[in-house]
Picture 1 (tube, one colour):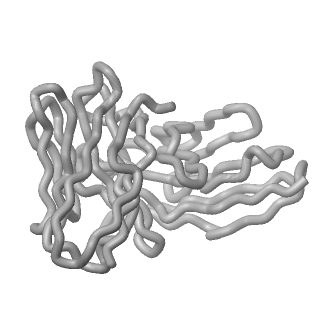
Picture 2 (cartoon, each protein chain N blue to C red):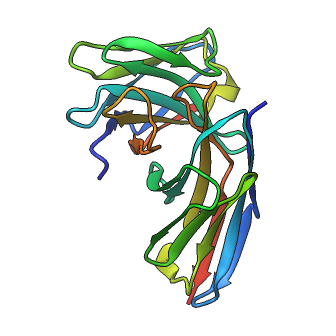
Length: 115
Length: 111
């Protein structure tokens, strides 16, 4: 158990809908990262927050947004969903802002299926 | 463009049959190279960090090595419980904190 909690584990929705994925980082970790994993693309970095502030942005679509709250949990909002958004969404956390050691702690992911 | 390529995509071994996984990378200034293990239905789990060419790290039956263009994950006398997808990632200086992952090598070890 990594200590990172993600909900929901599975989510099935229709095209055009909006969903929210939630992540609680490990106790004491200030950085939260969101990654998307699909079969053809592998793990793709979406966005990072550190202590409530956005720190780095990857290939995140404009239809997607995220935030980190004062209690350090984070939410990833996906809107106007398309079939291609079906994927595993992982949250990871680390205690520091720069991951020099590469040691991210990943949750078990939220599997999104868009029909 | 920063890129990580892993080979082979899949590898089947018999228990005790040693082998190596390859991770080739192109990055503008390497901050670090990382290996993760991912079991089905789980999130990736950190294994190693390598910072400079010539560095090696070991953990049980796994040994990771790094050159200026690639990294190898050597698996010695594997057991069925070593079956998993092994992911390689790099952190480029210009990309800041983001890790760039390869697509992984899925290892199956049969008894």
